[in-house]
Length: 363
Image 1 (spheres, helix red, strand yellow):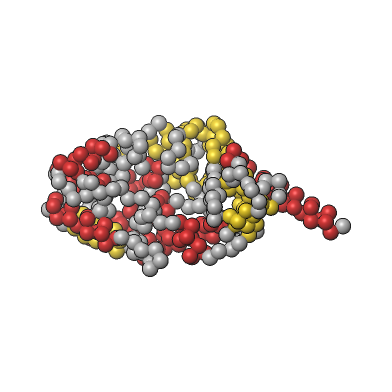
Image 2: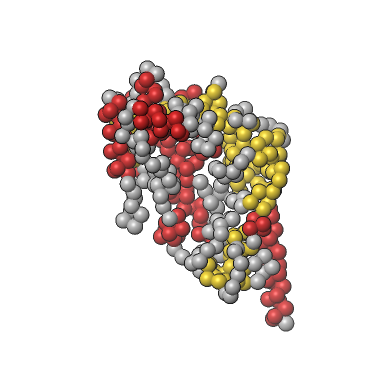
């Protein structure tokens, strides 16, 4: 129970269905003086709901596990130029792994959450509410956990959940949905990263090798990010520009018009399958970000890696983020995007151009 309306209603529905329910709040991120966290209020709200439902309530301290498995992995990804998704890490490592181990003392049969998803015939499928479906964030969990998982709100819409919470008089009925990173909430991510990674000014240039300004550190930016005032010190007047490639080893940021973020081929690694492992090349639907509509893809094995070709170019394919595979509403699994050949080719052309220009200038 996170202190939000979805997990509150999930607990109420389970009790109504006759389950012996224990409410559990996960203490993950506890904040810092510079980046405070409102976990005390969230825990208090969850406890109020548990008291109203007359169910036992426990707070499980997983702050060390969260620091190691989510926060450190998040920073490590950015250090190496990737953009990891902390919510996927949180589900995989904390909610459906560390928590399950921590509550074994209660000898539970199931672990239930307020995710908008469903489990049908031992498989995860999308939630009924297309606007709230959260199956994208669940691809990394251990397949062995599937028989133990319940998603009580997955067959309802958000408006139905709100109505149920109101009819039950739950104190979280009208509470706003949480925003931001799992267990962290609203956060200015770039400032958060800069506080840990530190600024590292470097050169921003166009795809033809022309320098156009100075950035604050290539690992603070992500592919497809629009560069507004303050994010890059521009030289002269420039049109709207977006990050189209980067190299953190050389601290180089390549910028250009939005259309130059488009690509249709990339390499993904560390796949996790929630259905039978595909042994041959296959076609299905997929998405590379949460709010993106499903798109057709063809997947080819290359050793342990996946070569993914999309039916049409999509914008801002980003190393470190997830490619999540579906067949209809069924979640097949996912993988982590490793490289985008179009971005690598662009960097190689820039290096060749700048090296040629340097050689010419020295003659």
